[in-house]
Length: 121
Image 1 (cartoon, rainbow, N blue to C red):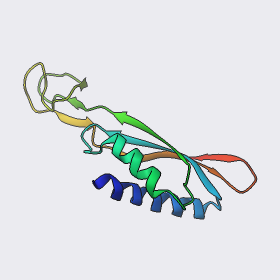
Image 2: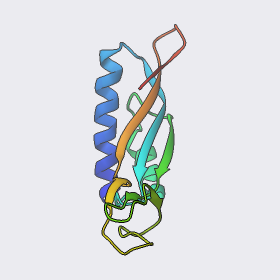
Image 3: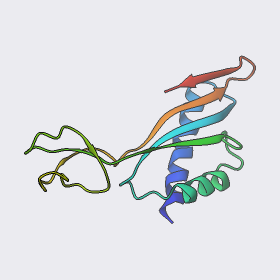
Image 4: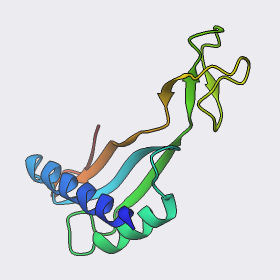
C-alpha cells in the first residue's frame, strides 16, 4: 500500500510548513489527485488518519479533489477532451496529456496558537 508512504510524506511536508509558519495545528488539508496518479482515495484517507496520530495534523480534515484525465489532440483540433483514454475519440491520435497525473497539496489551514485560522496555498 503505497498510500501509507504518500501519507507519511504529506505529513512531513505539513510539519515543515506548520513549523515555518509558527502554527500550533493543521486543521484542514486540500489535495488534488489525478485519475492516473495510481492513488486509491479511500486508502489514502485511511492512511492519513492513522499516520497523523500524534502529529501537528492529528484530527485534520483531508479534502481530495479528483482531477480527471484531459487530453488535447495534436491532429484533429479537439482542444480538450475528458475521458479514460489517452487517444482522441474522434480520430484515434494519441493526445497530449493536460491533466490526470496530479498529486499535490492545494492548500492547508492552520491554527496559529490563538490568532484563529489561516489558509495557505
